[in-house]
Every structure is written in C-alpha cells, then in structure tokens.
Amino acid sequence: MTYELPPLNWLRTFEAAARRSSFADAARELNMTQPGVSNHIRLLEEYVGVDLFIRHARRVEVSEMGSAYLDAVRHALSQLSGTTAGLFGLSGERALTVRCTPSFATLWLARRLPRFAEANPNIVVRLFSASFAESSGLERADIDIFWGDGSWSGYETELLCGGPSVPLCSPGLLERIGPEPSVEACAGEPLIHIMGCENFWARWLAEGGVQDPPPWRGIKVDNSMAALEAAASGYGLALVLERFARPYIASGQLVVPIDHLLASEQALYIAHSYRETPTKPEAQLFRNWLFEEVCRDNGERAAMPEGRAVPEDAACAKRA
Image: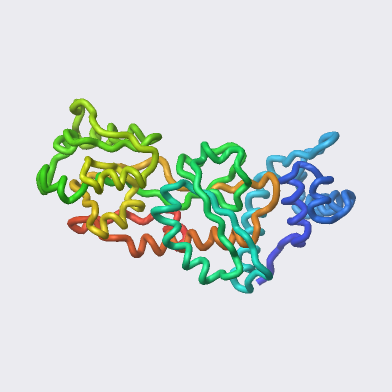
C-alpha cells in the first residue's frame, strides 16, 4: 500500500509554526534557520495546493484550510510519538505531571496508577489535584483532566469518560425509609449537594415526578469524596457519578435505593494545550493508557442492584 504523504519534517515544521504563530519561533524550537522553516512551509503548501498560513508583518496566522489540516497533523504526530514510546520505550528517566480533579484523582486514578508504573518504570508520574478554576497560575501540566462541558479557552479537549449520577445512601438509611422507596420518599431525607452541581437534585426529583419537593435540608460539600463519605455515615442521600461510587457500592458501604439515574451533560475531559510545546511522548503514552483503563473499567464495572447496569462510555465504544 502506498501512502501519499508529505515528508514528516515538513509536517513537524508546520505544526510548530502553527502553534507558535511564528516562523522565527518555530525555527528556534526546531533548531533550524528561519529561511529553512519558510522553505518547508512553502514546499508543503505546494504539495497540498493551498495556502496554510496568512502572512502578516511580524506573525503568521493559520488559514481556514490550514486549521482543518492542523488537527489531523497533530493527532498523527501525537499517536506516532506515543506508539513509538509504547513499543520501544523511552531513554532515561522521564517526569510526567498529571493534574486532575481531587475526586477523580482519589476515587479512580490513584488506584490504577501502579499498573502504569509497572509497565513504564522509567516514567515518574507527579499527580496533583486541582479543579479547572484553581488551575490558572499553577505550573503547566503535561496532562490535564477536568470535569465540565469540554469547552475551555486555550485548550483542545477530548472526552475521557462520563456516565450518569446515581442516588446513594447507607444500608441503615435504606432500612429506615424502606427497601423500595419512591422518589418522593427520598426527597424527604437530607440531601447532600455537591457545589457546582446544585441543580442535580432538582433535576433528579423533577424527572422522578416530584414537582413540589419539601423544603430542602442537608449539607453542601465541594467534591464527590466528601459526599460519598457523608452518605456512608448515614446522614442522607448523595447523588454522585456512578463511576466514582463503584468502590463504595462494591464494599457495601453504600447502596442504590432506587432505579432512577440522572444523565449528565458534563463529563471528564483530557485537555491539551498546544500553545507552548508539543505533547511529550510520555504524555501521549499516558493518554493512550487512560483510555485503555476506562475501557477496562467499563468491562469490570460493579453490577448495580437488581442487575441494573450502566451503558459504557461513548469514548470507549468508539475505540472498541
């Protein structure tokens, strides 16, 4: 099979110049001369038959066709880099900084990191947690994983995983309100709200047919970990991403009192910033491993009560 492709060094030059909006800055990054960068871009434009850049006095701007091509070039270069690192390894010790939400770090990622470390002993992972709002001003991370709608200025995002939120309570609380409580009965118990997701309970109740819920009583916490622990103590009901709740359900600390899940318009995304440097090989390797772990998680997910199961993530399904 013959691939009709321009030379790889032209594509690397194109990606660097597009990311930096400057032929001179791309030349410094690639250890080339500025005329050398200009020549690569000219040859690539002749090869594809369109102008990839709009030239200005002191900078360049990616054209509409150039922008469409850039996404594919970045993806191809990142995949090639990650696959090369995965198959043949990386020379020397590498540090990889991963930043994600506290709940994702504690309830999902930390317990899986040993598998990555065993497979990649020369990559030292530095994991720290912060919400997206807290991340501004912090040191640049190689991998960012945040919860939201996937639209953040300065980042290109791809869906990692999502899923519905499930109501949860302690076995003792379920015994008190009855083995098969109604949505209305649940509404009468203390409800644990997660800040930033305050409308989740209102939506859950409305979708369950409760239009006039009783006056709210409960507590507000700032993350899913606190909500799960508060529910496990027997205080009230929590509404938490099912993926995060699985260990608590599997251990018997929490149960799902009613077969009524809440679909979420938000999810966990990998956020890439291409403004400074291209994705490091170890970061692409970690990104590929994350998707493998999400698919593994979907395959091993704990069965819900009464055989209720949650559909696998679209992000995983696309990669199956």
